[in-house]
Image (cartoon, rainbow, N blue to C red):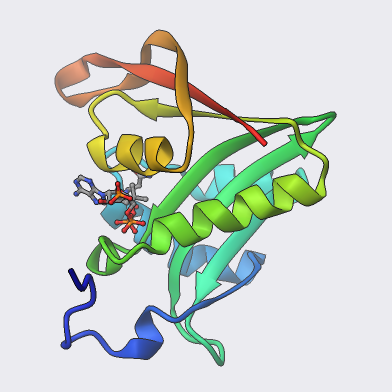
Length: 162
Ligand SMILES: CC(C)(COP(=O)(O)OP(=O)(O)OC[C@H]1O[C@@H](n2cnc3c(N)ncnc32)[C@H](O)[C@@H]1OP(=O)(O)O)[C@@H](O)C(=O)NCCC(=O)NCCS
């Protein structure tokens, strides 16, 4: 099965990884707002950059558009993936898997032993992404996320040994 419709230009999905910089935040926030119902604020991204987290963007070559991004911390043998997001019109083309594999590669070079993340229990695409990359459910945080109509939603905690 081919995942790439002919209507999508190749340069839109053949991106390269680089560090996220403050100047990216305008574009990142536009993607974030379109991709999530409850999204991060610009301040959260700024805090991640300031903290020195691994903030990576996958972008089209030659300064082209950002296709997706991932945020991860890594220290003392543990990594935490905080965010992986793909531009909505480019979803379903294995870009998230590329972002995830890239972050896992960084974790490996940082001698990380265990990678953790949290995901909404209703987020089937993300659950499938992480399960397909070898992450297993290790716990639940009840009511961790805000949900529509003032409700709350559980977070599934997942982990993978490297
Ligand atoms: C979750 C998300 C990152 C997936 O991005 P993507 O580029 O579409 O994912 P990929 O094409 O790399 O596919 C990865 C896996 O997810 C599955 N998947 C992708 N979209 C799916 C969907 N709508 N429904 C079910 N599974 C889906 C793919 O089939 C693939 O699984 P497989 O390897 O078993 O075939 C994307 O939907 C997104 O950005 N969502 C908003 C942000 C978000 O929820 N991030 C995760 C929380 S941290």
